[in-house]
Image (cartoon, rainbow over all chains, first blue to last red; front, side, top):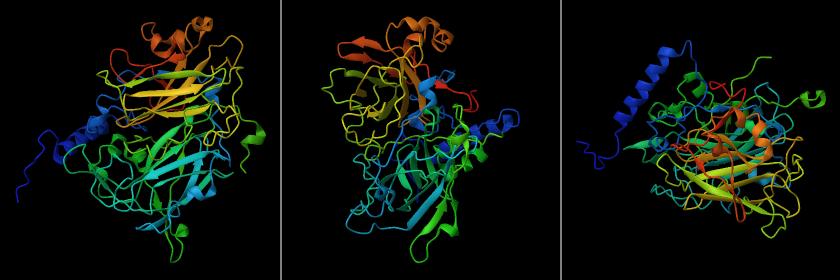
Length: 262
Length: 188
């Protein structure tokens, strides 16, 4: 069958992949003396980024007092039930029940304690409950796909959900995002704010996805991929994934008391 | 001490509206509060088109310059100033906060709102500052004095009838000065 492109304004996957490969090759040529560890905001294969990225270098700032602190969240902000995305409705959501656990630390390895983590995701069919998601996969009346929780005294977190499906989008023709869970994190400093996505191991869509590939360094990219952990798998209940998160360094002068691991 | 490599960021994507906004997110104080001010503005792309799927967060000192450390931002009690808020842009690309004017955290320093910008199409979060208009401490401010004078106005809010207006240009001739801090990687 000939695949005629009915939407000639959209690039093909072949064109997007060629752009991704060209950027990857130019990075490989300079990696040894100019390694990257961050996400590029200027990454044209992700078409929506073209008019939405700064073109000038970020300006270096020494954090002032307010930037060396972060907002504080407590038990009045978050119910423990919000860490289970499978119990928000009267019935069980469809899909593969999973536990995701890990630890949030700063760049010096200090646990980020009692801090807010927010997560959101598509359902097992790859559909977001968001009104703008027009993907004709079924909504699940028993799954909203949003949760939040506080880290523990050792920086640990754990939540229950179902494994999200990959979902189609209109960056280019036949574009599919690898399955992912969105994460929003706060640190001890304002400057440590992180919004990112966690992926699942071995996803065949990794090489095709311009959002994942906007992290040009493979080692850095791999930091977004959870590992399957049988220790977290619960018999006859759910499979387990581990994902540890490292925020940037803290600028605070830590007292000995605060600096001790719990 | 060996620094660990930080986890890279990714875009907030298009579908955060059912997860991140919450009731009262942008009202750091009740709208009827005697000292309340409005901090608002547009988030714009490289062609000057307002962005209806951006998310702006602010973090600020109290009017007396103290750093708030009270929890309760997600379920505000109407009495506690937590210093943090979140506002998704509306269909016209506008965000809006009801809050208090931040004070100087040190004697003689220039007060500002610390601002985080997220949007569909923006692959990593951006940081900036919204300084208060026409403040005497601007001349000696450690950041402002290192910024090209032509771009300095992008960091300073404008006074209006209800408080302050601060537009954010992700790109273009008026591109906002965005910040990086020590430890953030390649741009150090």
